[in-house]
Length: 352
Image (cartoon, rainbow, N blue to C red; front, side, top):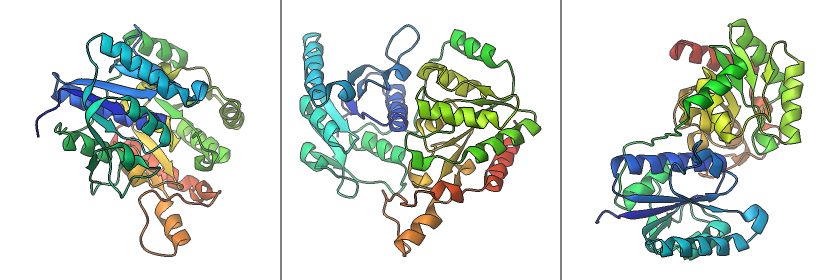
């Protein structure tokens, strides 16, 4: 197979998946600098992949389904027409790495000779109708391993993902001044789905435990009312916790995670971002398989009860790749002692 000269990577959401796709795109650019790479991404997440000079880290086409509905696909078509006028009217390869109707509609707007997608094992929502090449599911169940398989299948094998957010030193200094401590333990307590959240009391106990070890605890999260309330409840149970929930944009969040020594988070975009900037992260899992959606690096720190809960629900010894635990209180099966053990392991392994 000849090496393609232009690649379009289609992954709209969620934030963690876009971060993983960005790591794959970074590896392609690093190993094949002569290959043009473009990402199609949801507008909500695009600022993370744009530097402080408002320049795309990887050329991007943004879609806004939240504001525009299905018309967002037509907006993408118009953006592609403008790109064609600038000299690029099609791609050699489209990597459609999302099995959703929205992604499939976007794929219809993208001209490409070869359109790669998931095989029957992972395909859903008529995904196979919109591709002409199937990517065989790798033995490694991790979502990012699947992304890497796309690169190999289209003739651009990569060694490992590379994340370079090009965080400006001024940005690093800015967030450092807000905390002014060398040993930061960042707690990002909220996932986009409430079922994946651990308990306020559990996070508060871990905050106090970290303080006993001499770390400064910082609470991080988005600007919605739910996350603000969770962080406020945790802070109320502790002394000397810095609550920065709702006070950072995505780039500032990345910088804050970068300067942290250790992060605690459930299955969330913040968890993936922490490992992508190179900070050890303790991921908490009960609803989804950490071997599939956990942090690519630092998986040895994961605290997971997923497998036990899934096997109990299925009443068997085989767990489907995409299986989600139904128990609404699944995360409460994670004990504070389990998280403390991982915390102690992180301090020792990473000399924190």
